[in-house]
Length: 278
Image (cartoon, rainbow, N blue to C red; front, side, top):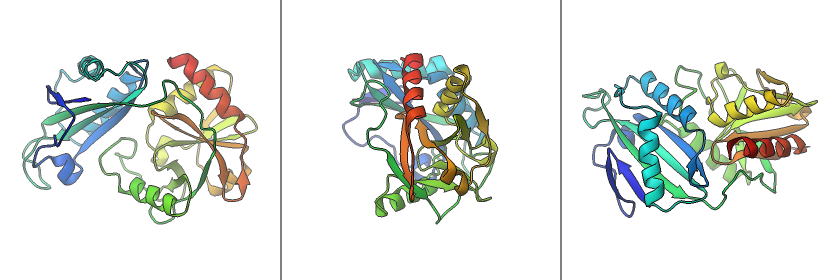
């Protein structure tokens, strides 16, 4: 496998992050994770747009050359060089350049791109449904950065650790108003009477690229979608729950505490997703 560090392409077989990297020292950066299917990038433009909006939100100086074509050319070079012909994933990081402590010396950007193969060459619905619960220890505060993938991920990390300790597959994150907004690595949808409900971006969930795809696919296929507040009682009366992210596509949830769920809508939507994107 190969990586691209500021247009220096090197083999990914050892340490590559330079001393003083602000993403490492302070979490001073944004990132995106992009799915590769048949050796091709999926939904790239939406990922790049969100990444650049996030970089702007944390006051990075974005070069005029940074656009979808700029990153697409470099990622495709790594895909070919790494011989990824089917399934894979790419991660792009934008970090503020070295220098300073909490006050940076510059707002210029370093970029870092890495690619990896994965076994699946399309979106496949999990055969065993996820078992989930609520993450009660920490909440996600609603801020102007809530919708972006910044490198401040401790709430998600602690939630994932807690899920493992409890023998669960995932935990749902709440905001500081007590509304359920997402899981530790995915956006949240619930299904009631054939209608999809998902937390609003105003509630502080990630503005997921797959979330956007599923909303658009559902609407174009006659399925109603509402963005609204989600509370624990909504989970208990739902017919289905599923999670979405850019790598897995759709993950169906089989249980929340003692409640059990079907996966009919999840099956339908992942089929429509594969037809649209592959």
